[in-house]
Length: 480
Image (cartoon, rainbow, N blue to C red; front, top):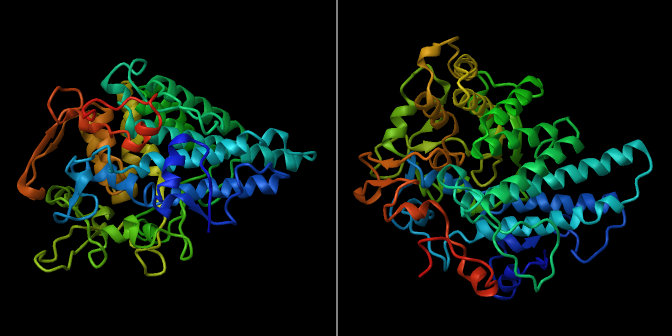
């Protein structure tokens, strides 16, 4: 395994401080030295593989980003005090330590993709096939660059719903490999979103349409862009993009006989983009699968309220995702969510869904509601519900509103890191009023309010980043 200098000031400090090998080590087969000029498209592809590998870190999609979106919401909680993820669940993140990998790992990925993008246009390509290959590599690098920036700004920046994005601090935009002595300031939330949208629009026009497991294609870029536009309060644009993905016929909603098993195998007809892990390449016991498994770390469990929501319709196939927690004292409580049961009978090996077609149906429905096209919203929700219950047209137009939409998002996307972001991006109160939240401490957080906890809907910039880059400004509430 080989360490790679990150070509960004913040990472130099991490590198020499003896940081976790989790996000700094990359297999020699997956990455080139960043100071090495590419000789051909094969070299560029090797570097691209390394950029995809950045997503596999337990500090990123293999655990922390997913648990962040769930534990800080209303439907998943820590199983007991002292378990992994408690700082997320209890809103106790601190600049000194908490979740710093969610900053480090995307910027590491940005170093890799910017290295590719800085050289790809000079790669020799003479035949139509070579030109298409070069464009496809460039498009994937742009899509990954957009994803890295989008994740950073939604974790460390205020949601556009909760303030003027042109005046709120986002994250530093990295559009090229920078000098190690550079000290980039934070760009505005608006600037970051505009940059992400531009990258995804360009990427979609360069990449191939065909599916390839764990790889961005043109429709994956459009699917991500539809999500970004929804976050950015552009529902009309989100609807157009979501409808384009749905009508492509490249993907299809799974039927009830295939749904539960799809989380074991991954890479199915509903998968648009996912992080693929193998028996030889995974986060082992640090991954989200092992965090859920009662016989593993058992750090996560569904709330009683969420178990009830999942069980409200016995004909809904999603009830089959509930499994008993067999630990002492749990009385076979159905708190184990079978979304990361593991491949090859191991919860340590799993694929992480990043974009599924069901989410795109939900994006289309939400965007239609927000543009007052209730008939379209009804159609998209009913399509999804029919796939999950085998019951056609269960919702009338009069039944459809944001409450119904958010209810269905909870049931469909629980455990995939969405709930917290869904609440905050819509300016909704995070209301933990169930009977089984840890420490019996109900929590009420208003992203648009002025309560003492409200600042915690945004992560603190890691302290070591501020120490090496005085151009960065800490998020409000974490300055001390």
